[in-house]
Amino acid sequence: MNGIVLSAGWRPSVICLKCRSPLDLPIGNGSADWKASCAVCGAAYTISDGIINFGVTDAFYDDHGFTSTGREFSNDAVGRLGLYFARSHFLHDITRAVRAGCKVIEIGPGGGSRYLANRYDMLGVEISSTSVRHAAST
Image (cartoon, rainbow, N blue to C red; front, side, top):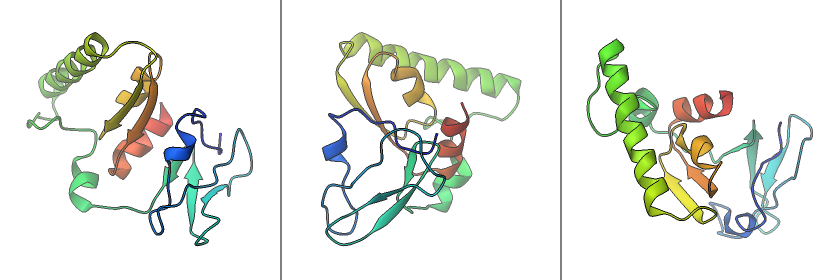
């Protein structure tokens, strides 16, 4: 999939970083070079595996993406198990607090947006390229 999968309700909310105008977003499957484009200023953003790349990079988030929840977890089996339970609790809390079908924006979702998308109209905003690659591959 190369087009962006986004509900009609979210489409007007995705705007150009340069001029803040709504982006033209392709629908469905298409060519590998699909872009989200701005009719006002001409900016274009690559879409890969249904994810718009706005070109934001940050070495800290790339180095730590998808491995932390604000606490330090070791990379061994015990640390990964702790991370799993920390994330599961967070996702469970969201499902208890937010009614099914609501629009939800998650900042720094890692792979959590895919899980929550089964229940909500999700929009995940992630700046870690490591997390984005992981979410696109699941």
